[in-house]
Image 1 (cartoon, rainbow, N blue to C red):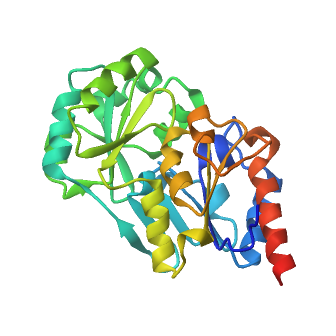
Image 2 (cartoon, helix red, strand yellow; image 1 turned 90 degrees about the vertical axis):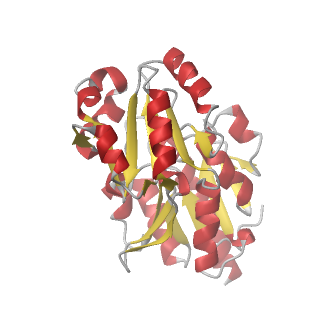
Length: 282
């Protein structure tokens, strides 16, 4: 595979850049820094909100752009503004909230880069976020709201809806409810959640939206991921890459399947190949 045309790389975080214990290894940090030094824009492409972007990644010198909420926004850290920003209209947010009250879940909204959560449900964070790493991240980033529906009604819209379930069985019920919201894109970043954005919004649209701002074509773009919410950017990028630990459905859509997992610095190994291709090109 010829990587010499790549100028923009979107990296999923959980299961891709991060190890199972939510670390970015020193080798991966070095590889990201070396790729940036070679003239390649490297950015996180995640379902996380702006305030949930990991400093381990954003603090790497040269990281300028941040894609979050599954492509609902791209933030320019230098200009301190959104380059891409797509919202679910408030009436649709309220419709979704009312529908999901029928199931056992914690319904959250991402607004202007921050996740808001109903206070009564979030008191049971250990129940709705059974994974200890995800629970710790949620406790660190969420803004708790008492009258949640009233809060929703007063917003201009939401970047993303994040619905967390205590178990996969409850998530199945949530997916049935989501069928009543055809105006929204439904994805999932972990086994016990549903993530919903505006119908035309996904990681791929966000990544190519940034590429257009930068004057780049799809063939200049690489996307790397492991889970179903990564499929759109893997399909739309010039080169779509699946980790060794990726879901089968993700591998089926990828141009490249890495022989290395997130535990074996798969991203670092890939980035070294891309950087080497740039150096060889001169």
